[in-house]
Amino acid sequence: MTQPSPTAAALHTSALTSLPLLARGKVRDNYAVGDDRILMVASDRLSAFDVIMGEPIPGKGELLTQMALFWFDKLGYICPNHLTGDAPESVVKPDEVAQVRGRSMLVQRLKPIPVEAVVRGYLAGSGWKEYQESRSVCGVPLPEGLTNAAKLPTPIYTPAAKAAAGEHDENITFERTVEMIGLDLATRIRDLSIAIYQAAAEISLAKGMIIADTKFEFGLAPDGTLVLMDEVLTPDSSRYWPVEGYADALARGENPPSYDKQFVRDWLEQAQVNGKPWDKTAPAPRLPRDVIEKTAAKYREARERLTA
Image (cartoon, rainbow, N blue to C red; front, side, top):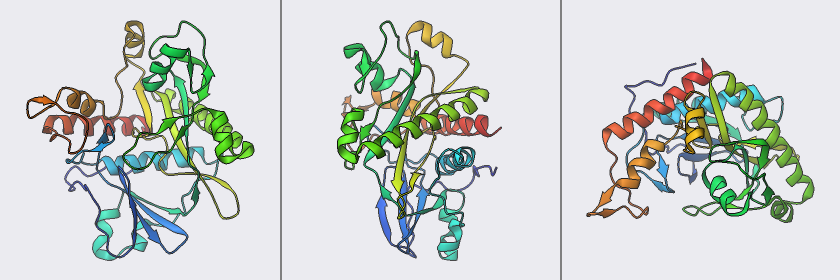
């Protein structure tokens, strides 16, 4: 597996002129390749609290792409994915290859399904907050006596409705997804998501990492095939915890250390703008170099452990 080059310039925003830009997400820039394919370029942007930081995290886009490709390869037997197998470099001009090499996927253009398929194997984040109030998450009842970061008796499916850009995704019940997309499709997505999570969690645990929760996105191919798309099981879409340190954190009722942007979130929580705490709206405060470096190192460590 290629190592991201530490000397390569970080890419905050791609600027391809050979293809029409479809959309810029928090991390990915998507370009149309004809009417049946999309070039997804993973930039080094980082968002926290739904605000995109001004400073990129060097190497992040390459790491996310490598992790997604690792998982698409491992999990293809469960569900088809959107990879075309074509080289991303083949669809841009020679002087644009440096912007796409190692950080892009050339994928099928699908009809996206407006449901974030979230699977939780452990109680954390918004799930833990909801459990404390109702002993349930997204309408799924859970036993009494669970603590923060506790492993759930079995993984649960807790979907979310995709929000417009800049808005928070909204946790919804399975029943709501049935209303949105029909019983057959809602059930297939739920069952596939749990199967993918369980397979990935087992592989990850063997490498010393816990996948606490994750989210998948699906689309429909022109022939109606349900296809796994977007990124999959990266630290941006999943909560990864190292096995070491988990038991101590659980015993203390604290969040275990995670392989993601936690350094950035923690720093932002205490950051001041004009003498006041940052209000979590754009623009974000400038990230200090040590926070950028620690975050880049965490992404690298997750990829290295997984693919070792």
